[in-house]
Length: 117
Image (cartoon, rainbow, N blue to C red; front, top):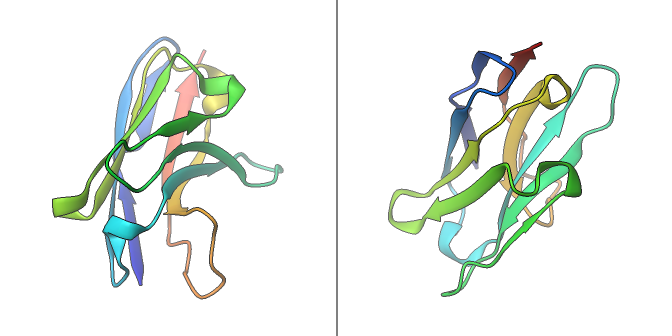
């Protein structure tokens, strides 16, 4: 299994970024997919989830509700995270993975998002 996240960068507070993550080697269509993040010195936290199935229900951490949007493209084995109105506290390495996380799936490198004030 490979999870390749991209799209991070340096942005000013109030700006936007769109992250992408291509997943290979797993049955993407039937897995719930999520974005997680880890800030320096902090534990990794769940940011957003898009569930499998026709409705593609989403779920967000309170800290990003109304600012972030997670979507998925099953045909492309890709999950996206649109991040708007970014804040300095959003600075972290962002990873995609399944939800729940399985121990045999490597987290990959993630993609660094830095928000300047």
